[in-house]
Length: 154
Figure 1 (spheres, rainbow, N blue to C red):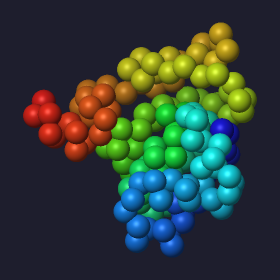
Figure 2: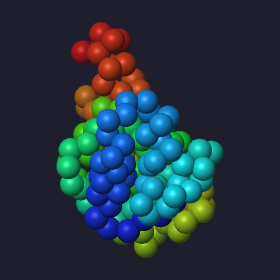
Figure 3: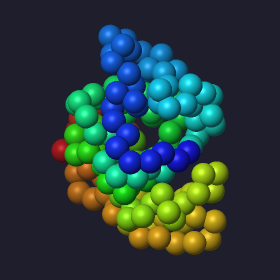
């Protein structure tokens, strides 16, 4: 699924749903302002491709939770708002930065990602994004910060 620049957290999960904590309920309303059918489309497992500053706006952990619960397997964007990036990692949602992502990847293409190296393969074409390393990678591999802490690996 493909989106443009400046997708803010109020678009990812509108504020009226923030009082809810059930990830599946949040998932049903993910990206609702842009695509009311997003939840149905994403449920089979999708990669979001987006432009610049994905996840900008208010600090809203529910944004990452809603996307992951909706079926988003990873997000490739030209850039991320820093707090969204960290919230995604902390919730076990891979986020990869790739220059010109929206020009290089078309909607519906099959995407494979190596989160460690940042290598992205799209229908046989290879691109080099920014991989995830260090503690962020360990948290991601654990499935999120809570699972990482429970594992005692730190």
